[in-house]
Length: 236
Image (cartoon, rainbow, N blue to C red; front, side, top):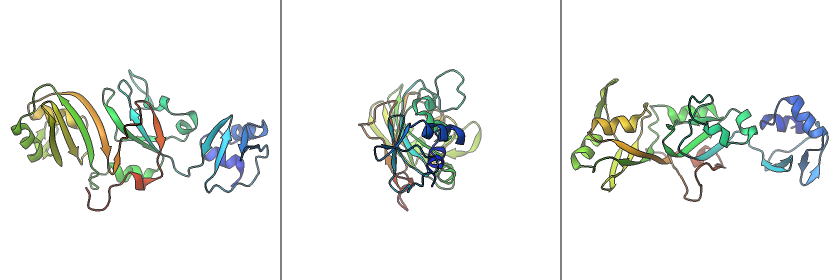
């Protein structure tokens, strides 16, 4: 692949902007400046440097972010900063999308990708991809509430009961809830329907992927690919 095309595919600007970066000596391959936009590059395992920053080549971007509170999962936020401002410009220009949005006050595991097929796979209601939430509640969690959540509660906009796939009382006011649907404000509405209230909400797992303790709020990291996210067959 032409070096200019490599930069363009990774989100470093328009074709002209990418060529200008190369011509200006801002791109290095294996530590050496390459100022030829037409230079042929093998992208397998490629790590190049643009304006002093190392950048691994990824045909598709697969990212995990520890979403902090006070950020919206929107390209055009209404009242809070966007999670996309936490990403470097090349990834924003690649138009990576948040998979399964989290409310501004909800924290935890957020997947971002420009792989449309994976986004469909992760969000399709037919795929039943599990998501685990750590729920802090206003009142102590009762056995009856847990039974209701597992049996299914009725939300005002859906006549069919919505049930949790799993429900564990970690502490008096800490519930670990596993869902395989993706409805609007689902956790908060389910707890309200069961007679409690969500005070804090944190997503700790999405599919096979668990948020590592080493990833601080606001930080992100690359994933190897869909295999890091998708649960093994039969796990959901």
